[in-house]
Image 1 (spheres, rainbow, N blue to C red):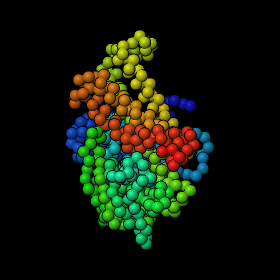
Image 2: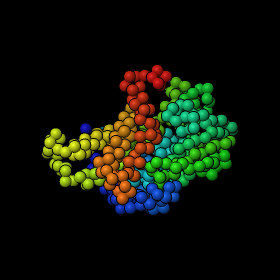
Image 3: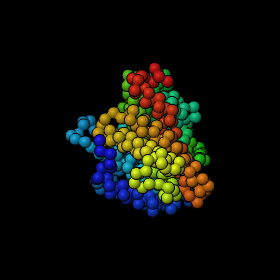
Image 4: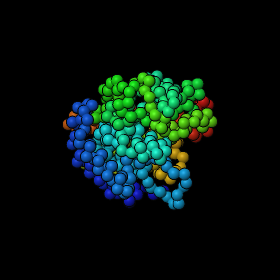
Length: 400
C-alpha cells in the first residue's frame, strides 16, 4: 500500500491549501461571529470548482463522489472520492464551517452522486443539495424515520419534520429521507429530492450552535408537500430482503468525507501547536519519547493518531473509487476521525493554556468546530455498533 497521496492530485491539493490559507482563514473569525450570515466570498470559489469539473479535468467536490458504474475497471484507480477527500482536508485546514457553506458541495450532492440514475444526475447537475435525515424523534436510528411519502398519481405527498439540516435554508434542494410504508420498516425508506420553494416545504428556524457557525443548520417541515415521482432517488420498489441498503449507500460516500473534515481541522490545530512549541520539538523525531518533555511527547502521540486517521480515511475513499464494498471501512474512518479530531483540537487548546482559550488564536474555534464531526453522519456510538455488526456478521436486529 502506497502511503503517500497520488501525484496526480498534488496540484489540486496545493491549490486547496492556498485557498485555505489565503481565502478561508482571513474570514474565519468574521463568520464565526456573524452566525447565519452567508459568506459571499465563497461564490467565486464555488464557480471555479464548477469550472474545473466541467472542463473534464480531475473531478473533485461532493457532487462527484460515488461508486458509479457496473464493472470493476482494470488496475488500481484513484478517483473522485479520494480527490474530494484530499481537497476537503485542505479546505477544513482553513475553516470547516466555510467548507460546509460552499455552494453545490453539500452532503445531499454526495447522496445524489451515490444513488441517482443518469437522467437525475443530469437534471440535478449544478444544484446545491442539502441532506435531511434527522427528525425530532429519530436521531441515530435512521430506520425509525417517521416522515411519510404517499404515492398520488405521478407524485408523492410528503408529511413530516426534519431537523439539523446543514445548508437547509441556502441550498437549492434538499434530499429528504421518508418512508413509503411505516409497517414495512427500514425497507420502505427512500430518498427524495425536494426543490426549494415547492409548496408545503417550510424552513421553520435556524439553529444556534457551538461551532461551524458559518454554516446554516435548519429545521424544515413538510405538510402535504407534493414531489414528482421522478425525484425519488434509486429504485421505487420496496425490497424487504434488501432492506434500506440503497439509501444507506449514501453514508458509504459521505462518512469518509466527514472523516476528511475532521482530519483537516485537526491538522490545523496540530500545526499551530507545533509552531507555538517549536523550541521543545525535534523536527527529525530523533529524540526518544522518554527523553522529551511531556508537552513534546503529547504532541508526538497526537501526530501519530492523526496520521493513522488520515490513512483510514484515504483507504475508505480508495475502496469507493475501486467499487469495493466499504461500509465497514467508512464507519471505521468516521469513528476514528471524529474521536481523534476532537481529542487533538481540545488537547491543543489545553497545551496552549490561556493562548489557546482566547480569541486571538483560532485554536478554540477549531475545538468547537470539530465536535460536530463526531456527531453528524452517525455518532461515535453508532459507528462502533456498525463496525461490530460487520465484524461479527450480525444483523441490526441481532445486535442493537
